[in-house]
Image (tube, rainbow, N blue to C red; front, top):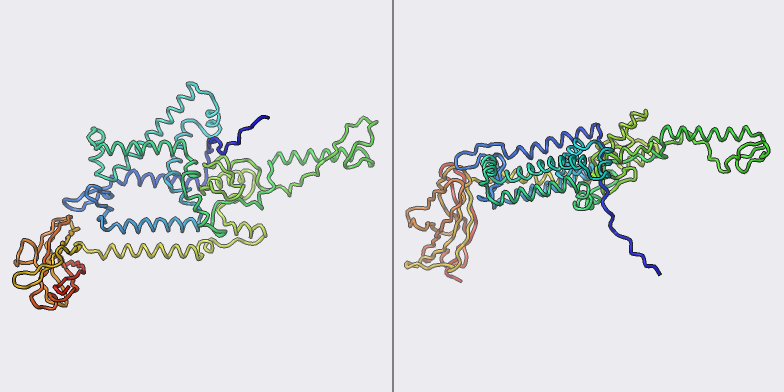
Length: 520
C-alpha cells in the first residue's frame, strides 16, 4: 500500500510585482513619502541655540547625559512620563484613525510602506514595469539578469546605509559623528548600529515586503477590533461590478449566441430550440444541444475583470474578494480602477473609499451617509476625547514644571540623633536639580507647624544657600533640628516640607517629608 506524505502547511512565497499606476492616491503617497523621508534624513542636521554648555542639535537623544532635546523642550530622565504620554497618544491616534479611516497609517506613513515604495521605485527604474520584472524573475541567470540585479541591490544597499546612518545621528552631534564615521574614529557601537539597521532595511524593504505586513506586523490582527461597518476603508462595489465581463469579449459572446439562434430559426418552423436536428437529410450541420440564452448587455457589471486592481496591489490581493487582513488601504487599486473606468466610459468609484454600511445602502438604492456621520460617531469621539485629554495634560505639565527641582530621602539609620544640648536632629539626603543653562543660587528653607531649623552639611549655622551648576544635579545633605522639649522633639512624627527658591528668578519647588522625634 502506497503511503502519501501529508500535505505541507506552508507554501513558497509568490513574489509580488506591483504595476506602475498614476492617480490622486499614488501622487498623494509620493508626497507623503517625500515628507516623511525628508523629516527622517534632515532632522538631525537642524540646529537650535540653547546657550553655552548645551548641545545645539534641535532633536537629540543624549544617552550619555540622559537627556532628550526637542527644539526648546528638554526632557530629563525623571520626566519620562512625557515620553510615556506621547506613546499613549500615538496608540490612541492609531486607534482613532483606524476606526475612522481603516489602515491609513499602514497605507501611507508606516516606515515599512515608505521604504518599500522607495525600493519598488528603484526596482522599477532598473528592471522595468511589472511585465518586464515578471519575465526577468522567471528568466535564467545570465549576464543581463545579473547586471540588473546587482545594480538594483547596490542602490538598495545605499538607501539602507543612509537609513541606518541617519538613525545614529539622532543620538549624538550629527556633524561630528559624520566626520568620525568617515575617518573611522567613531565608537564601535555606531558602526554596529548602522550595520544592523542597514541589514534590516535591505531585507525588509527589498525582499520581505508584503511578508512584513502580513506575518510580522501584529496590527492586521488587531485592526478588526478597531473597525466596524461605519469605518471608511477601501472596498469594491460588488452590486455595481458584478457580473464581471471582458467588455468587447462579452460583445463577441452575444454576437455568437445570436448567430446560433438565427441558425436555428433559419432551419424552419419545425426546428426545436434544444435537441438534435430534425432534418439530417438536408445536409445541415448538427446544432448544439445546449445553446445558452443571448447575454443581455444590461446584465453585465462595470467590472471587466482586467485585473488592474490586483496588478497594482503591493501585497498581491484581490480587493474584489471583500475585506481582507492583508489589505493596507493604500488605495492604489482605486487609481487603477478609476483609470480603467475612464477608458471604457464608466463612472469612477467601482473601487473606492466607502463604508460597508454605505455599500449595503447603495445596493438597496438608498443614498449613502455623509462623510461626517462616519467620522463623528461614539467610538471616534471617545478616542478623540481621550487623545486630547492626555495631550492637554502633557502640555499643562510641560508649562508648569519648575526650572529647579528637588527630591528628599530621609536617612533612617539612625532614625534621629540626640545632640549634647538635648536637641533632636534628623538627616536628609536632598538631590537638587538645576535644569537651566546657567548656574543658580538656591535658598533651602522649611515649613512646619512646629519650630524646626535647617542647616547644611559643611556650612554649620552660616546659612542654607547652595550654588547649583547649570544643567546638573548635586546631592546635598541637610540637617533639620528640633529644640529640646519642643513638640517636634518629643512627638513620634511631625510633617514638614522642604523648600528651595532660586534667588535670581524666584522659582520655587518643594517636597513633603516627616521629622521623627524621641517618643517612639
